[in-house]
Amino acid sequence: MSEAVEKTIDLDKIIKQKMGRKSKYVPRFVVSWLKHIVHLDEVNRFLWESRDKTGTPWLKACVRYLGMTLEIRGEENLPDKNDGKVYTFVSNHPLGGADGVALGSIIGDHYDGAFRYLVNDLLLFLPGLRPVCIGINKTGSQGRSFPAMVEKGFQSNYHMLMFPAGLCSRKIKGVVHDIPWKKTFISKSVEYHRDVVPVHFSGQNSEKFYRIAEVCSFLHLKFNFAMLFLVDEMYKNVGKTFRISIGKPIPWQTFDKSKTPKQWAKYVEDIVYRL
Image (tube, rainbow, N blue to C red):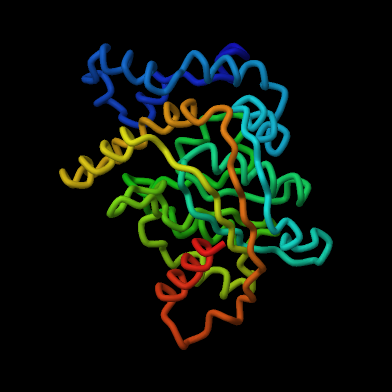
């Protein structure tokens, strides 16, 4: 395999890996459409030009490539990197891509790259991102490994960066907001004595994206079809300014038996949206 293939994305190969024998039934025009909607040529051009970078340097290069201006508020709330502790950073997920890149670049820079994302395993196909990812496939045969992969992340000496909603924000009653946060970050932060740092990221996707997401929800589609448009949304947000608000760390002891883990997750979600 040539270096060019290793350092870029081969969509045909990915489809075969994810679908197996069923991939031969995918019409060529559908594959061509996918390559267009995910801006494959543009993405591969960036991946090739940044092929010498991985982890935090790659994330910072991506922020520059996307022309993102990041206004950080509450940076003083980031715990000292030399305090000997590891933290769980949790954020809303308004963009579904660029927000993760931006937050990773900030946290990675502050903590000398000592952090990990819990992400959809599709992102492992990005060579520069792979070293800082714990890939999770929640469906199919690999779904059974989900708890073990989460456990691996929290047992590590890395700070964890999570988007507890699991999906990027939707438009709910006219307001862009995450779907309800899952409780995993609460239960695991308590179990491994990790204080939780709340983060809010500004921004939103296009009206088209929210309409597609709404139709998918209405049809009860098992596959997250809206996800296919996230790269296109990323390019629509090129050159924009985003505000990142970092709150004070919440001690893990806060999450006691007075509320259920799910209620505590909602408690932290509310704090994030007040930042």
